[in-house]
Image 1 (tube, rainbow, N blue to C red):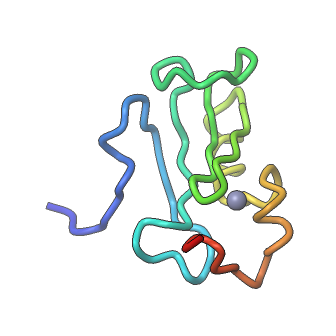
Image 2: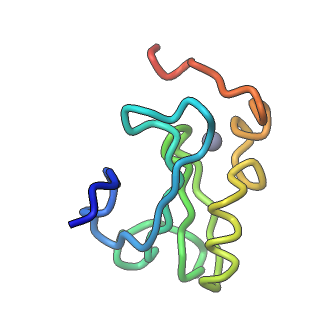
Length: 94
Ligand SMILES: [Zn+2]
């Protein structure tokens, strides 16, 4: 069995996930791709929902390749990630 912790992979509609940001421990700092329809996420008809779990930001994308590309660059759709790009914030505790 893999020992890699993926705290979101038992969620309905889960497709893929990755950690984002240098301080991503304790389950924060994850970006997750969901099958939008299965997960019940409104993406204006897009097949996949890329979610910044840290900031609850959603980006709808149509293709798997783009979804993965988007997942690897959360700053491309999450303003909070873009604002903290390179210097990860610790505002999670509040
Ligand atoms: Zn974010």
